[in-house]
Length: 235
Length: 235
DNA sequence: ACCGCCGAAATTGTTAGACAATTAGCTTGC
DNA sequence: GCAAGCTAATTGTCTAACAATTTCGGCGGT
Image 1 (cartoon, each protein chain N blue to C red):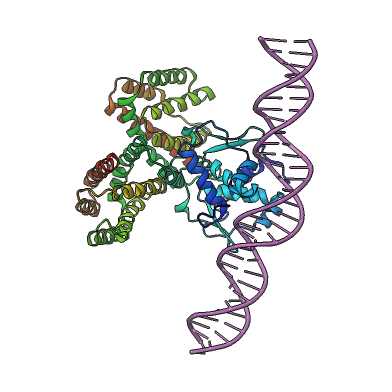
Image 2: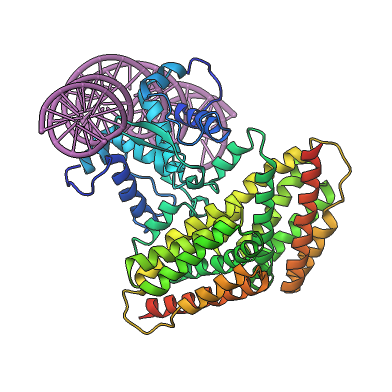
């Protein structure tokens, strides 16, 4: 590209650039993108790179191309909003409050149910991994890099313990988005309740096989994160 | 392509072909696909078409390409299993029993919660559309084409009434997959309980704003569909 | 005046060939 | 045995051309 930006294949960079432009509303639904040749000129790359990028966007449901008609931005309802990359692109712009609320609402539906399943189905090895992750979190805190990755591993272990690969895939996507909300959250230096005691409680519940408790704790955990995030966004 | 198969752009056809080959296990995770040039020869298309197809697959998380290393099939856990196309490809092969169970488990988590939300949030217009869809279903039955599309519209209206676009996206994906399970179901001529009374009940609950009842009915609806599908697969 | 048909231009779709960049895997030397 | 460098294979990128498709305009008929 004329402007040497990020490393990696040009079609990936470009798909990201165009994808962000679309999801942030630069090209509203129904809009026809500039022609491939024009885009190639704009970004200083060949038509091949443009086309491969557009194929990636079409695979995510963002656009559809037809001869002579051009490449059109599809209706938002047709986008694969749960695609992890797409979610990440959403948070590149200013994520709307409504969108963040939708995200937490979905978490509130999926994760307590997943915790219930995990409490019943978890293997010893999975339980051990959860325990280790909680330990690291407690020692490092949630503001450190290590602490945050431990948090992610903790929740990943829970999801894996459900034995439901669709649930794993879904929450991987959610987790990608949540990473961004936590990023926002800790950008604003306010006082938050320490979530680590709740994580400990959740671990205990799963260890005891207490599905109801696991659900309850998860609900409190998400509610708290939701409140914190809303406060951070409001400020 | 040498074998003129389905119409549409070649890269779409090929992505589908390769995608099905991957999800059905012809190329297990970790396998390196044949080189682009070899694939081009195999399918009788140019390298560009191959590359555009591979970009689509990589956008869905199925593969990743690196110079000299080739294009490798990623771990199944990294696939965007909720991608509608990917789900459809899964059902091209024989969907494993575990996968179908995961699907119904996910439905059981998401759809009752969605019904609750819809019962509280639905607008009059949405309610009217649901009512109309139920009427069509009752008149046409669920074995006719019209009846099935009415069924889909009914559930789509419920999801839309939740006001949560992530939930809409998620259940669109699920619906795509469910279409396939119903396809299997009605291939096997057994006796099933008539689901239409339950649909009526669900509509009533949503109309009355009774969230609890909406959840309960939806749970019974999915449980019944799950049982029917398992019986069909077992036979 | 309106409707339908038909043509043509514009856009994506596809191909071919070439070169560049990257890096996996081997080979060599320490 | 291990590390550093080399090599060759593969993907990445570019150019240039033609094909196929179909939207959009104009034209004619009613």
